Amino acid sequence: MRIFALSAALILLSPMSVQAGDVDPGGTLNPDEMTWQSVVERAAQGESSMVICATGYMLTKQGDHTAARTVFETCAADGFTGAMTWMSQLDNNGLGGVYDPDAAAEWDRRAADAGDPVGQFNYGIDLIRGHGVAQDAARGRDLVDQAAAAGLVVAQRLRSAEYDLDVVTPDADNWKYAPLF
Image (cartoon, rainbow, N blue to C red):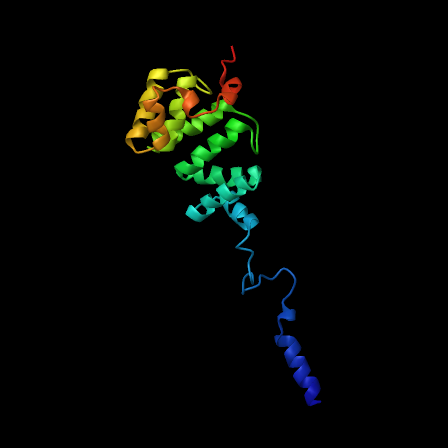
């Protein structure tokens, strides 16, 4: 009889007695928090941080451009200028989405407007070429000069080469930047 009473008490007090639909008050045990997928899911829910944004870089380097785009879009919306320049790179090369030079130039402009030297350099080149934006070589050179003054070595090299773009981009890319009309 004692064994029966003890068994009944254990059954009533056990976690198995939680009814279907009840919320587990203990939360999720061992959440999946240290994987690429969990970081992408957190970014998709609007969370950003330096660690989450840096994960976008690793994702794109491993070739998962769609996941990287999810991370970078969230981070860029929160003002991370490095994510803006990565979004430009993805759009300018059709990685994880369609090739979109207009969107790429817009990402560069946003980073430049936020004072990011890489954004200034990239948007300056966009303006010099007229790629994704109306050509304005004088304004483009000014932005390259701002990036150079901020210490960006590649901008200093371009400025000292009198803005000869072949110094910073391979001539094999000239087909890509040729006028479309």
